[in-house]
Length: 254
Image (cartoon, rainbow, N blue to C red; front, side, top):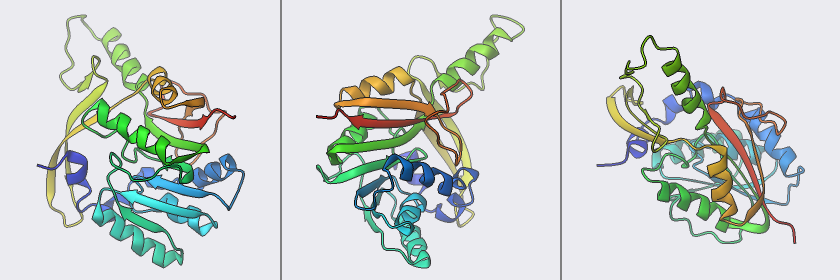
């Protein structure tokens, strides 16, 4: 049986592009451009590129981009989108847990939970970060978004405090405080209107975890910010109301 994320994206490209969270692309790419000082000479890797929205927008603005994804149907839609926009993006079918790149890219991006943190185990998620780091040149930069563990932690506690009784159990709370994983059932229809019932399993991270993981991969300059759709900003502080966090990581300067 396929993992839930593979099953979901087997035939979901059209509906994916109608999701509200896909509508902030231009503003997010504005931020990415500023982070690389508008340098058109750099090479960019988009991990978990989906239908290619960030890769295509970056290419449209003159950057060399490669997009990789685990879903052939998402990549097929990405190639169609690239053709419509008249840009050339190298899209490849690859698993983020097993990437062949080493010291090849100046920038790696993983936006909107591109692969990380959807894996079944923490080890798999870490392998994705490890491969992203390996793909970067020594002066490279990693920009990604991930689920903010402060959000469910705070709201779970708040619901408990505000409950009528300290013994009341919220049977709808699927967030596990021991593992910081949210395991839940999602009923959804694919592009052919076929219903799917998915057993989802997503990992939330707190800032200290992300910092430790990245430092173990030799990143030294690590910025963690709030994550607003289409409005990425280093000055946006991460709060318990941010469902996602924005992470910018760089290796130490020699």
